[in-house]
Length: 442
Image 1 (cartoon, one colour):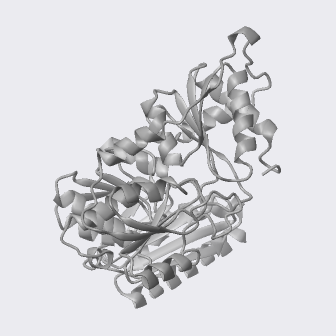
Image 2 (cartoon, rainbow, N blue to C red):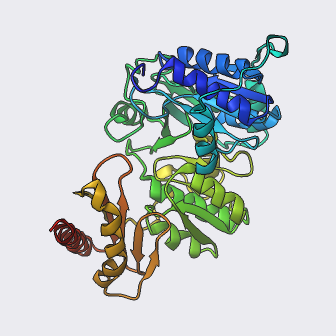
């Protein structure tokens, strides 16, 4: 913040967005980061200068703003947040009128407009007053009508000092849950833990769940578009297994036949969903890619292992708050008595991840050669997907190689039903990539 991301740049972004929506309504919100007020005001200044109508929703979780963008019939939504990233970072997430994240083409259009040497300023007599609103109750009413948690659940909720600091615990309490909280105060320094809910950052939550005898723990990232869950034993529930169990339950109850996951998700999801008559569609990594596939296939759920779940019956934006409520409601109303039992029947296979150095100038050629040579490593009959990197899969294992978008690396992921097989595949893929890079370098 204030290095690559400056108030001047954000103002031009506001002007560009105003041009894109043709002076229509834009819903704006921000998270708890120290720089969020600064960026939000710069963005609003640009929007107003461009002639847009601005509805300022203030401090609000990202999924709530996305939901309200559609409810208030805004032409776009703009959320000031760096989501799960460290406190010194910030950014702006943009949503269309349906509450879905802007796709790559729309982002490119906004960037083009923002770089215009002659931005479009509106005349003084056409400036619109900013409207300050608090419409969170409309989201709360939607949740009340969608979720019923049965029984007396005891929960520890950790909003991580982020945008769900109040709303997350409140919604569980309204469901009759007894809720203890940690990190439930808004603080842009994120003093309790890092904004991203990981195994390391959730150690305190896990300990509290176990020591207090709670049924579960729930955590959110900085803007609450992601969630993580701890079971009654204080163990973080692996997200792939959680997606598999929840997706299978949705399918078995007739809520939809299709579940969408990215190419790097575990094959346990296919095993669980297909066992109850459903199907799994894989797409490129990234919530906008998942959301587009969910809409295209009329899927029941779209989910990434990061904890970003899309529940299309309510919203096309990843929603950590709603997803955690729906999950606990699903467990409480089903045959499982606990979260650990809920995922008990889902297979767990070893997944290995690695990075291999590759100069930027060689990435494209290396990936072209891998398209031809990577399938030779898989001994069984395999399927090849190239929607995001190269994914070669069989019934027993899969390999994924993707280019890093930020570093001179190729990222490798391997999953197999046997750990030794996974290790062998990782070794073979690593040697293959290194040999290709060496060939291209000479």
